[in-house]
Amino acid sequence: MGTYVYCVGAAESFGTGRPALQSTGVGGAGTTVRTVENGDLVAVVSDAQTDVYDITRDNLMAHQRVVEESLRHADVLPVAFGTVARDDRDVREKLLGRERDDLHDHLAYIQGRVELGLKVLWNRERLFSEIVAERDDIRSLRDRIASLPPDSAYFERIQLGELTDAAIGEKRDREGEVILEALRPLAVDLELHRPLTDMMILNTSFLVNRDQIELFDALVQHLGEIHADRLVFQYIGPLPVYSFVNISVSWEE
Amino acid sequence: MAVSYDRAPAPRSAVQRGTGSGSLAELLNIILDKGIVIDAWARVSVVGIEILTIEARVVVASVETYLRYAEAIGLTALASPPPAQPALNGRQNGRQNGNDSDGQIPSADDVYSYLADHQEGLRLGEISAYFDAPRREMSRVVGALVDDGRARQDEEQRRYFVADEDD
Image (cartoon, rainbow over all chains, first blue to last red; front, top):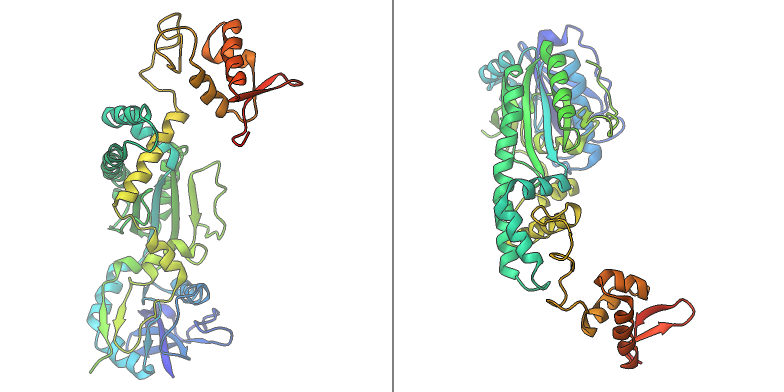
């Protein structure tokens, strides 16, 4: 039986006689969440019933809830989903012990800060009519194809698609940059993730000081209203700072 | 800031707000491979359905994508008026659908294909209006189609239909 690891924080911010975490751990009812300590660092863990956890909704939710609850006690460094150590001792020695300096550096960097996630997507129909309106070459090729019998003009249609693909790419860069430009001054750091669909303009995580969250919210709200009829903003947070932790550890040796 | 598990009501504002555990799908790409990553001993087995769904939607430029875009662009023609086309006025553009080039009277084939597009049937007046041709002349063209067995008229409703294939 191993030890499932959720996150790492400073022992002092969890307080002495640490508050028991209420959330149920990954693995279902009865999985108690507890902590493992080494010096001034703490790992939030639970007993693992297996080495390998499937990526199911229940498991992911359980992981996320524990990390979010921990975040209410302290600034924590989240551990990727599904991480199982051989036992508490490995957590104490190989994670909290061996990586101490790196963990401290990261904790200092994220202190008082949270992650906010923002995805911005086009309204599909709006996007295509905007492209037709903005691009003479695409509009005239479209009109030419429309005058030909259906099911002919195969290569013209591929060419139209290619032009459109390039136009979407340019539009994404341009519009994404405008939105980032507006938000950047309020963020300490940002991380661009790959767009997940072709309608996605931005898939971004921002590192934001807690006392700036309200401003950041208001700005996102404002941007959303400006573009209300053409863009969708998916905004989540505050999140554990997943995107701003860059520590790779091995249990080996 | 209040943490709310509810999405903001959609129509009023375009911003959908959620927390991590409230909108897991939005979070998947970071929760799985960001944060402290520890290898060896054990990591996740990738049997997750949700992540596969998301990955499948990742953009891959391909002929299929291009054809899909071409279709989407083509559909905009229906939604927005064609910008370069002057309004119908008088003789210049009197015949919107450009059937035959000049005579006022459309050919039997043009009328036939127009009828074929309207399985619910058409009155003579509708056909005349569409082709912008005198009623009397249209009656002659449609009558010829009926005589040839390519069209039929419902006596009661006074509508014309294309004849059934197997007649």
